Each structure stands twice: as structure tokens, then as C-alpha cells.
Length: 131
View (cartoon, rainbow, N blue to C red):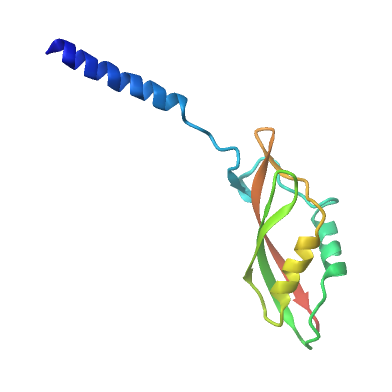
């Protein structure tokens, strides 16, 4: 009886050790920009981003259009932009145009955590005013 009990305990302990060895840690964790050590950045900073955006954005031909388009996207480890989503727009194709311009964007400087480049979510308000 003692041998059987010892064998069962030994097999259980061995399985625990094997399970610990096979744990994989994903390197593709998605970080929130707010909680990251080094924030992702458009080449030249956010001011340059807004200049780039204003230059490339085709504002709808609607008088007195005023509001904000809110977009979210992921900045990958290589700085490319992925998974662009419009969270809120003001109609007249403003959200679709924001997606078009973001897809054309040059690569950003990626965010970093613990000295490594990481994927980051990024939320951005874009003001539209045709008054």
C-alpha cells in the first residue's frame, strides 16, 4: 500500500514539474499606451502627426461640420499600424477617411517595455472643423 501511494505521489510531482517546463510566455502581449515605459511616437512627434493628418485628410464638403473622430489602432513592434477602428465619428464619411489616412501613415517609433519593443494600443481624437 505504501509503495502504491508513493508511486502515485511521485507521478503527480513529476507531472507538475513537466507542466512547469512547458509554460510558454507570449511575446505578443498588447500593452495599453498609458501604462507603458516608452510611448510609441509618430516620426517628429504628435505635432508632426497632426500636420501629416491635416495635409492628407480630405474633409467632406459639408458646411459647418464640426466635431471629433475617435480612432483606435495598434502600433506593432516594427512601428506599423494595424487594426484601425473608428470608435466614434461625426458622419459624412469622416471615420472612413481617418482610416484611409492612417493606413498611409509612415511607421511610428514603437513603444517599449523593459527595454523591448512591444505592441501598443493607441487611441486618438481627431478634430474636424469646416466652419
